[in-house]
Length: 96
Image (cartoon, rainbow, N blue to C red; front, side):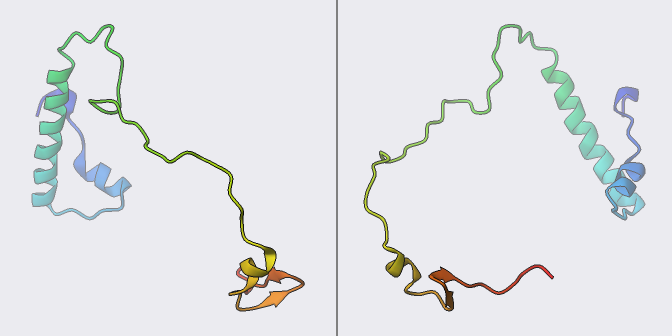
């Protein structure tokens, strides 16, 4: 592993509260080295003037038009309420 990529896998695992065997630590160190080596290859490209993007192609939301329409009456909204108090839905207390 190049010195720039030297990461103490056991320390990182401890911070993440993970228990790794020596074999697992070696496996993850190799994977992390592969990831960091790949990132090093990406830093070699001249990206001046290239705008960062989240997607390779533009993404658009396709939504229906937001048009006003009649809502429920209070009686219809409360029709299926299991328990009503003063024209409101009563729910069990959730904070003690």
